[in-house]
Image (cartoon, rainbow, N blue to C red; front, side):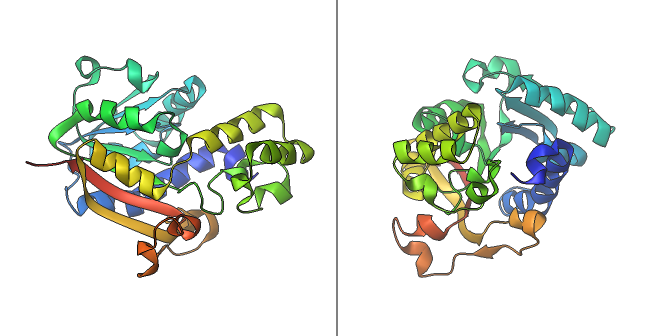
Length: 264
């Protein structure tokens, strides 16, 4: 397990740095982020990704099903800004209505869609929170990438640095985790990720099915987040490799994309 997974303040700050440096410029290729914009993060955790939007002056909402994560966010965000233009909600997104929070210019999910059950249902549901000209940003690791199972959170150093073994059948995967001394709650978390992991193709199909269109899409061989983690500069997957179906999931460590509802 990496130190950043134990040190939540450090993780909170690292999230903000990556969002400021890479996510906001990515969104701004199609929409300037100005103080009048309303922003929603689904799966906000402790709120680190929200910080750059809050500092710009955007009215920013964060929703997360994790009660403890939101408790931390209510401590961490005020400690790092004097602004009050943020709202934090500990609840399942499916319990939220537009009457409660309104609609948004920007909705973003960073390292979240791969944890959501029934992603097709989510894509249909979240559309109601988007303004007519609004955009959605997604950043996620394809399931088949080296650490798509999130096994880096393992306490066992060997298992936390071993790539691709999350692709093994569930029974063998679970047995390896038990042999490595991982506690049952972590095994449950990792096997749940195995159930919800998402491929590039399936994500593309969901976007099309729900009448969204891509404004921008990039596959990264080196995830932008690896700069703050490992001091590695982001690197995109080089064509023609980015067009190879199925196999690109194995060497794409992160997908960035911006979508909107199709304009008739």
